[in-house]
Amino acid sequence: MKIYIPDYYEFAGHWIYRGYQNAWRSMGYPIAYDNVRATEDVKYAIRHPGNLTTELKEEYILMAVDHAISTEPEAMLRAIHNSYKSFIFVQPNKFPQPWGSHPNFVTHLSDQHILQELNGMENVYLWTFVDVDPTYYSQWKKVHTIPLAYDSIGYKHIPDEKYKKFDISFVGGWANNGFDEKRKIMVDIFSKFMDSGLKCGFFVNKNLTHEQECKVLHNSRVTLNVHDAYQRALGLDTNERTFKSLGLNGCLVSDTVGQLNHLLPNIKTSLESEELVQITKDYLSLTDAELNVIKEENRQLILDKHCYTNRVEALLAL
Image: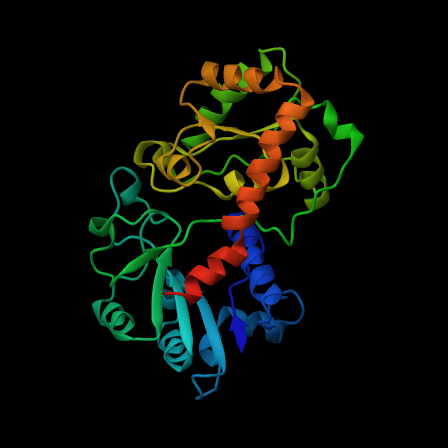
């Protein structure tokens, strides 16, 4: 059975759905049109899956996002209706202020007829990667929490002596959520680390290659994660870097968010930059053997419970 799945050129969606593509494929499901750069026809097919002409529900599974339905509702609803199963990622109908005033945080689907049609389809399963507060999803039927994960197929452990010089590393972007709140948080944390005497490998908007990112994270002694202001305040989701850092490295220091602490209670977190530095120094005071025990345990936990193959299994079990 084929899987029709979104493919993004950039930003977080690119890595998330590439992880899902790798997982589905590794589990024996052929991916339809996963390489959207191939031809204009393929690009059109994946961007407009409503043009799928099959009438047999057994032929394909569809992964889609709610904003694609709002763009082409008639075509998308036909594709969803004709699918064996459709797993639709949905945004909240409303969200706490000030974030809820920005379109990045709420669904673009407001047409009640479309919402009712989706809610009424038995082959449709709604999901999101945040811990669901029903008051934010009041117009959707049941929305399931499927957290982000580690792409154990796409990310490789690549030893490289050059990157072992870093005591702690971070690879990412400024990630403006519409309010540009994360930049201040990042600057505060990074500045404390840069003044700590530790050897920091912080790469922000540096366009590292995929291989370079794997090398930096895998070979550093410790990795760092930083979340956005709304994640810190509400605690409903943790970013993909949580799982990627643990899968590649095994030792993570992060600011505190509720979902991370719930899913991975052994990870040390703090909202105080100075305390994050101290936690890192405590890890670095361990012998290599002691630190490697922590890393191996964490890496195995991620492989056992928090890979995209685990998330596909969770979707199929709905």
